[in-house]
Length: 298
Ligand code: Q0N
Picture 1: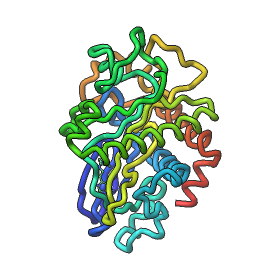
Picture 2: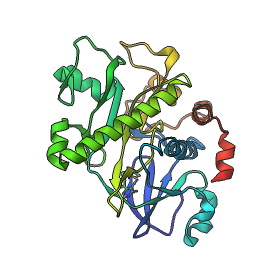
Picture 3: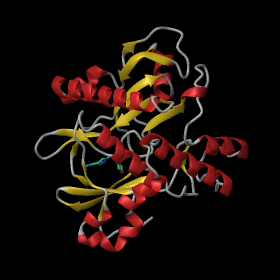
């Protein structure tokens, strides 16, 4: 990780957000990887660049649906104080507009798994909306559903809430706008991914208002860390689907005897290399450009 001459304003499991000035933040994606909710000690080279490059590409694909917080990912356009760190930041950082974030995680699901599946098994529905009986892990939903969640304290899982709870918290107008935009982003992402043989099971967005009151996308979008991507060819409801990006890591961890408590084990070189290849292939397959071209551009 780089030491930057900036104040840290927020830190996630695998990325950090720094204050640049009153109106701007720097979002830095690390090469760290989490599995079973634990950040592993072994980095995956270029993972941060892949996620940042994908996010920037998606922002462009989504630009007709809604604006986003990206100012620039070109390090030469970053403020002067960051120029000594340009090489460390290249490809994996975005200068962003500072937003007032909406205090709801905006999730859309087209398939049932994870916390959506748990909700369904406990209630027969999703965030308060009834679903047909008999659905299983990996089932395709008849239509994509907005499943908002409220942010939990660090380390805890977000809590799924009903649409009515979002209306109570934010008002009917903003709630409707969040649902509309989240489903529009999911729909565009799912369509584009499907053209490349990839299922977009679900995705989580962070939205916020700029100083002019305009609602826009923040954070990263439609990356393997914010979304579940499944290979369409092996989709089989009734079981856990293989992850597009992390499956080698999960398989190796499962066989290692690790009890899923921190700290996780170091990964062997071949698992690191195969996982890196999955990320690079995901970038190149989705965007149609090479990762090297992204690194040269950034
Ligand atoms: C912000 N988070 C979510 C990144 C994500 N443009 C922005 N303006 C103001 N606040 C935020 C953003 C953005 N993006 C988003 N927290 C603050 C969680 N973080 C955790 C750290 O990495």
